[in-house]
Length: 222
Image (cartoon, rainbow, N blue to C red):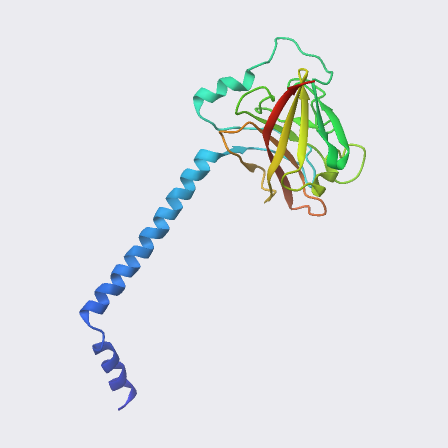
């Protein structure tokens, strides 16, 4: 039997039922992938918001924040703010594992600048806002302002403290991940939790930044 005859015989060997079964399998696979993408999109909408953190080159020269959340939660962004403020520290970040204690300022202060201090990112919440998210950004690398250089030593379950308005907030790290520097980062957090997010450039990698997500464990008086 020559090749043409063999090819014709193979094609004739596939029954209509087999073709129908193959078609059904392809249809099911297509439906699965469409459903998966839909679920993933919904998951991101429920547990993630975008914070636009802009930088210049390999450092965090200018960091701003743009949060897209449900309209009713936007009122929380100004909760606890007074009409007046100072350029003095209003709270402290303490990470015992890396011997770091550093103050932070009111979001409206001119000293709330990543070139001078750790930055309270505009749009984030202070620790006393239930289910809010305090976002702090800082430099890594070398020099006196590389306050977040040793964050690379942190792992899940490490403890972080925030002192604010005579109360001590205890957080535990639940997620650490990297993202490429594309002008903004995605902050993945659980909206049912009060969270603290730390952001810095990844050590020895000029193309990525590292995000540390921690959740509130307890609050006690100082």
